[in-house]
Length: 331
Ligand code: PBG
Image (cartoon, rainbow, N blue to C red; front, side):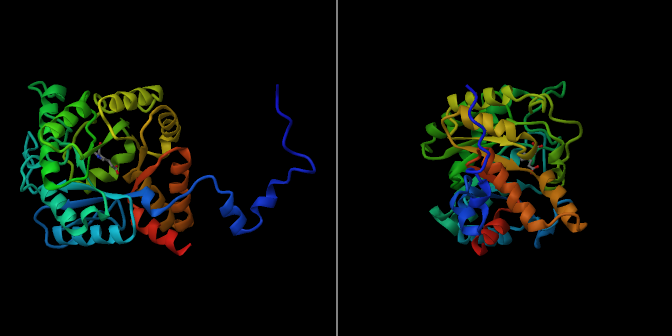
């Protein structure tokens, strides 16, 4: 039976839109600082922050300025920070990722020393920032990304990040079976409370372009043999379910804006909270249009983040997290 149309003299939806307070009271979606996670870059061997040209307002931090950014994130009540490290030297196996004195591991320890339990400290668990070929894993002699050999390195990287004090590790390399191997490694090391935020439905996307500059990536070619084909939605749901099965505490869809249908489908399918990553290219696109005077920057930022929440994301990773939190406090 088709429902009666909700139009006509009695239904006037505009009544509930008349004032800001009425609109607030019937809002279906909320956006608060706790929903936002700020990705931060920390680079070894620099003594002042280095601006990232394609991401105006975003920098590669020194260890000291990273500490300050993390403290600010805690004061703003953010849902966390996601740390990315850029080592001074890269090699074929990404050894800087495993070294307890490596830039990402020392930055995790710095961050935790500053904020303790007041702010979740998360770390990217992937090799691409540390390898000289820029891939997320080890390569075979033929140059393919070797899934199972990479898993062993991820396990060790997870132990190093847990030892440094990470609350959450974020495997983003899209190797099959990575969540299970990392969960096992953490548990065996006694790190049973370290959570896994799995980049489950991560697409091979052109929207990561500015990030490659942010981490001084040496990648030539692409990641299409391990990241997902943008054509596939059901596969994203399958990947998320596989990760839940392997012990993921949170699952992520990435990028966000072109994939809001996948965010919704994953949120409807999994029993754990869903995160979405509002990636570097999405940031750059809006910033460029705003700089040209073509869109109104602050409302566009808040509408973007609200849309990702409306699609079903509990948590949104965004380079605007700190600024948006400050805006929300003023509203
Ligand atoms: C991999 C990783 C990437 C991003 C986050 N983690 C790059 C990639 O997969 O190519 C992209 C984030 C962004 O574009 O903002 N360590």
